[in-house]
Structures are given as structure tokens and as C-alpha cells.
Length: 344
Image (cartoon, rainbow, N blue to C red):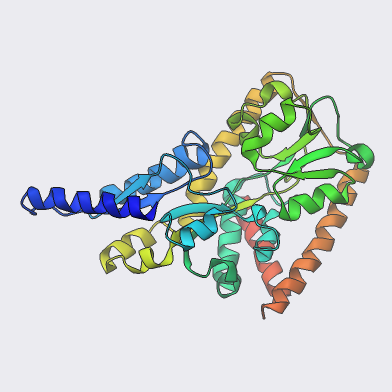
């Protein structure tokens, strides 16, 4: 892949030389995404954002989407670090044992809004966590974004009470979501969302933890009959847009300043707005199909709160191990959630 990219750049340079060299030669940056180009992350967020940056660079930067992903969902972090692709996004739940400090953004009950969850976490990262994300060594963090909220979707199996997930095979991404499934007695099946339809249609799993957009993006509507309608969501998994560090450092001051206008909270807001819109659209579609949105019992809600309280303490221990004032960080984060929720 690196050889192919070098050839493409040499061909581009030769074409400019033949043209007399008067125009600005674009620097090509190659993007790889493990979801298809039709997925909301790509079609409604990443491609429009990078196309806008490209246009504003007046020909100095060109962002090209590779026709196939260069790695698995979990493998894109190393792929960008090694320069196999210049830009990608990583899903924090897909890398077991990594991104432990990102897990606070995935906790149950915080918000169903991707803007609220994403911006709150990005602010927490900027204020408290930036120097502690060792997983991002060798890459530039362009910004965190949230799926909004995820919950339990199932076929005939109705899940509303504490024991309803006992023994159920539930697809999860990993991280906190895997632990959540185990906490309720389910058997977690850790697979990428892109395999969800095959797992569900083949009766390999009884249910799936996904945001609404995942159900519609992977065309699972006909397989779903029940959903747990939980205030604030059962979880809110996150993703980080990354760029090869050498590629970022190699930008001119002018182009770096241009890119910096978009990253950080800008990514969280732009991606969050796209995710919120598609989640709302998908929810409306699913309700119109007669899928049952079921409220949790008080017992399930109480057990979920106990899970959250327990894992906030786990997160605090991790934060303190990194020299972070954990109590202050948690207070700051939940204050951001409250402030942003009030703006909705």
C-alpha cells in the first residue's frame, strides 16, 4: 500500500511538471475507513468535512478515500501509526485493554445525544486526559465523537427486567459494553458491527447492543421486534479520528492552522449532529414498523445504576494511576453533560 501511494504521488508530480509547474501541486492524504462509504460516519461527516478542508486549501491538500479498508476495525490504529493510511477512525471499544480512560464516555444513562456525549468527552480530554492517552503515540488525535446512544435490540426475546438477559447471546463491540452484557448474565459475542446482520439472521445471537443507526445502516430492521428504551441509553460508545503524526507534522503552518479549525470539539459537534440526525430518523422508521420500544423495570434501572457507579470508581482508579485528579475530572465531565443537555 505504501508503494502504491508513492507511485500515485510520483505520477501526480510528473503530470504537474508536464503542465509547466505553474499550478499548486496538491499533497495527497489517503483515508481508510472500516465502514462502507454509505455509512453515516463517512457519507455525512468525514467525507464532507475533509472535502471542505480540501476546497479551502485551494489545491494544497487532497484527501482520497481508499477503495478498500487497509485493516480491520481494530487494526486501523496501527495502520495509521505505520503510515499505511494517513487518516482513519478507531472505535475505542474494539481494542481490549486499551483506551480505558475513554470508558467514562460510554457509561449508561448519560444522554441519547451524540453531540452532548461527544462534546462533553472532548472537553474532558482537552482539560484532563490529553497527556495520558498513550495509545495515541505516533498518531495525531483529530477529535473524539460519540455514537449517541446504544441499547439492546432483540427479536422475540423481550428484555425489560433484570433476568431477561440471563444466558442470552448478545453481540457487543468490547470494552465497557462487553462488561455490561456480562454484568446482566448474557454471553457476549465480540464482533464488529459490520457482522451484525449475519449474526442475527443466522440465529447465532439473541440480541445486539448497537445505536439505532447501526440497525438501519446494516439493514437489520426485519430482524428486530423489541428494543430496551432506556433513558440516556444503555451506553454511548466513542470513536477517535486519527492522522499519521508525521503527516500532520509535515503540514505547512498555513495548512495546519486550517485543519486545526476543524479538529477537537469541531469533530465532536459535526459528527454528533450527523449521528443524532440519523439515529432520530432510524428510530422513527423502526417505530413505524411496529417494533416494540419497552421501558425498563425499576429493578433493571437500579441494577444499571449500580453498574455505572461501580465503573465510575474503576475509571477513577485508572485516572489516578495516570496522575489525574479523578474526582475533579468526573465532576467536570458530568457538569459538561448537564450544561450541554440544557442547550439541546
